[in-house]
Image (cartoon, rainbow, N blue to C red; front, side):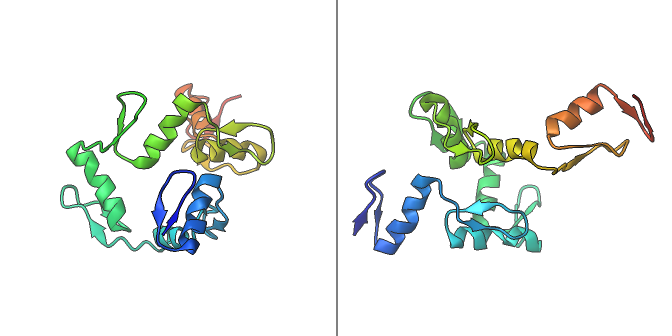
Amino acid sequence: EHTCDKCDKVLNKSSNLKMHMQTHLNARPFECNKCAKNFSQMAHLQKHQVVHTGDKLFPCNECGKRFSSSSNLKTHKRWHTGETPYTCDKCPKKFRQLTHLKNHQTVHTGEKPFPCTECSKRFTSSSNLKTHSRLHTTEMPYKCQNCPTRFNQKRQLQLHQFYLVCEEGNIES
């Protein structure tokens, strides 16, 4: 038996402990070649890559939505049942997903474990870092449906549409 000195998790092999330690370092050396999402373990990358094949073999018996893994289906079913199995130990908030709890807990610790490699800013979640990182690139994934204008932040597109900066086929200055 091998025990993690950070969280006391017990693993059966030293190689499993070594892989587990990556989670504490926030190291994600395995990158998906389709979407550039990073993972701490090769097995997690392989599981993720199913989302790009379109294979969704696990249907929800409530709404018919299909999922690429049984664990994603299980998480989805919590939206139907209202189940929130993850409770914050610092406040009464409850969550449907463990990752949402972990992201929430940074509110209490002030921890910002996701640093930007381009500037000195740090973030509480990988999704916030990803959104921020687009400021340093030319990536513009959000396109207005009414004009050719593109944005690197979803919020910019929403504001553009809310204030009716453009009309269909006619960009106003």
